[in-house]
Amino acid sequence: MEIVTPSLGLVFWTTLTFLLVLVILRKAAWKPILASLKEREEKIQDALDSAEKAKEEMAKLQASNEELLKEARSERDAMLRDARDMRDKIVNEAKDKAQEEADKLLANAKENIRNDKNAAIAELKNQVGVLAIEIAEKVLKEQLSNDDKQKALVDRLMDDVSLN
Image (cartoon, rainbow, N blue to C red; front, side, top):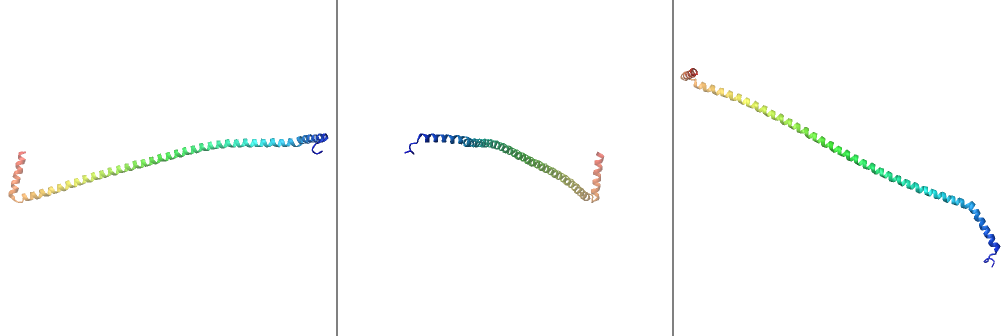
C-alpha cells in the first residue's frame, strides 16, 4: 500500500521537485511563452488596426469614386446639353439661311415676272400701235381712193383748222 498512501518524504520531495520544475519553467519557458503570446497578441492587434485602417481607406476611396462618378456624370450631362444646344443652333441657322435663300429666290422670281410682264405689255403696246397704224392706213387708203372723197376730207380738215 505504499503506492496509494505516500510517505511524508515522498510528498516533500515531490513538492520540492514540482516547485523546482515550476521555477525552472517560469524562468525558462513561461517568459518566452508569455512573450510570444504577447507578441502574437500585438501582431493580431496590429493586423486588426491595419484592417480597420484599410476599411476606412476603402470607405474614403469608395466615397471618392462616387464623387468622381458624380462629377463625370455631371460633365457628361453638360457636354450632352452643349451638344444639343449646338445642334439646335446649327439647325436654326440652317433654317434661317434656307428661309433667306427662299426669300431671295422668291423676290428674284417676282422681279423677273414683273420685268417679263412689263416687257410683254410694252411689246403688246408696240404691236397695238403698229396694228392701229396699219388699220388707219388701210382706212385712209379706202377713203382717199377716190377724188371726191379726198376733196371732202380736205374741206372738212380746213373747216376744223379754221374753227380752231
